[in-house]
Image (cartoon, rainbow, N blue to C red):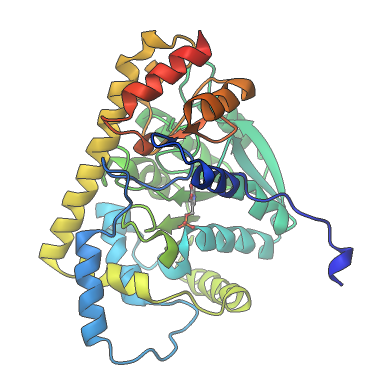
Length: 392
Ligand SMILES: Cc1ncc(COP(=O)(O)O)c(C=O)c1O
């Protein structure tokens, strides 16, 4: 059986991790994998999560199965943070379930589109590579549009044209901190998108993987909330893996907004059946820790404080890079000021990216994507210097 399979190319970022680990130079800079890093280069467990985990260890009395919907109290505890005051207006039309990370939620949302007879999905390019992979794996068809306008802002016109023409059954949108560009729609563009989606027939799936890491928990939810206030139905794929630092614990949720109260249980029962066939039920530990953090005033404040500190550090690295723009003209450093979150795309050729790695020990994705959080006050001058040299 196995010799009938075609070899698959390994994940490019995981390859980069291996290359970096094998590089024994003392001052390498890793801007590859998409995790937050502190000024010391670590990716520690949040203080509030650690405290919640201790409590869980002491107090959890059973690990008996939950259902495919996972920890429903976790799913409810997140809702005010995601939906804000608009949640009350959607009462009876909105439900959610726990998923294995944001990936599980994206997969489930797209599987629901397929189960409902959908075939084509609008996807901005570039995007997180797994979006296209999941669409393809499900046998759906990606209809591509450009996410970025030439001047380094988001190109809403491209997707608006598709939505108005009804080119596809669904559209997959990044709520904030766009991966890989860091370029998000402006508030006005989100409002336009919401109106177009309300007027058209394209089903919106909003992928929220980085809430709180861009401009703030509320600010980062603006687009999502504008859409949900306008449309009859939508799906929201949420990840706690970045904003709670739970990456490998795989914590996410899928929320479904239905046109009315009678359709909602049908959508939920389909999502449940699909989850059951895919992973049966999601892993418990990380979601239980998030539930405990959000249910405790002091832990919740501490989580927000740590998240704010992370966001501020990312912002200050963006500002420092932008202020060094004239050291490496043409690379696009000035545009980092307008972007959000961990990622930005630099305008570098494949040869320049190889030179950065081989001559300067700077590791980044072959696309030119950098993880801004891989930079620190200590290594930033070296990075700018290396950019200046390869772009001279
Ligand atoms: C845009 C986007 N969506 C979803 C995810 C999924 O995150 P996870 O499955 O780790 O929760 C990621 C992670 O990199 C992402 O960048």
